[in-house]
Amino acid sequence: MDDTLTLAVDCGGGGIKAAVLDAAGTAHANPVRVPTPYPLPPELLVDTIARIAAELPDARRATVGMPGMIRRGVVVHTPHYITRSGPRSRVDPALQAAWHSFDMQAAVSARLGLPALVLNDAEVHGAGVVAASGLELVLTLGTGLGSALFHGGRLAPHLEWSHAPVRRSLTYDQYIGEPERRRLGDALWSRRVITVVEGLRPVFLWDRLYVGGGNSRRITPSVLARLGDDVVVVPNSAALVGGARAWDLPSAL
Image 1 (cartoon, rainbow, N blue to C red):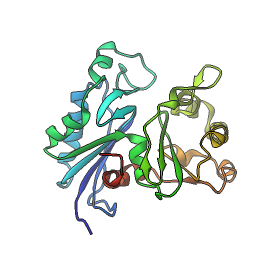
Image 2 (tube, rainbow, N blue to C red):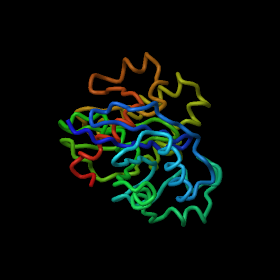
Image 3 (cartoon, helix red, strand yellow):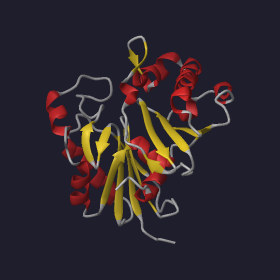
């Protein structure tokens, strides 16, 4: 078995978590988590990743999952990190300009002195759970809604359809994101989750849907029972396991 150790970093709106894993997805130390600092220019995120890495065993490569549209390691758009104080706060034009077209993959690689792979966070999450058989959709429930699509294990181009309207003027991010979960409570919020799942089912006609992210554990048992046999709720640890497996995705490199 390949004994390559991977530094897997999951960058979220509220926290940044990292672990070092082997090819089988086994962690070689307890994960390290820190709150996401704001305001967050690109250099600060790279420095934060480096500080976390210094607390973990040495790795031979690094995978970073972060929110937004990432193409070949370059940030096209990231929704949370361009704001003044975090998700749902005002956008800072200077941060928006700093993040646009920032080569995060090159910056992480240079800072750590390791080969690096930077993908959307839901794509990394999906790498940790997909079976590489048929059409598989991954949804992550957290600060907002993340998504990734795989066909036969091959990662499809990323679409930020979480910013599309789902009800009245609400986007998917706003409709089932963390602020709405806190406002509604788990029971009413879970009903929104199943509304989204049933609304997307005829759009994707998936063979398997994986629902993950930190808030997947908040879905109530009654809603879980109604999701269907083609829907699997997966642990948030997949975001780190996927860091080790993402290097094997056919279209990731």
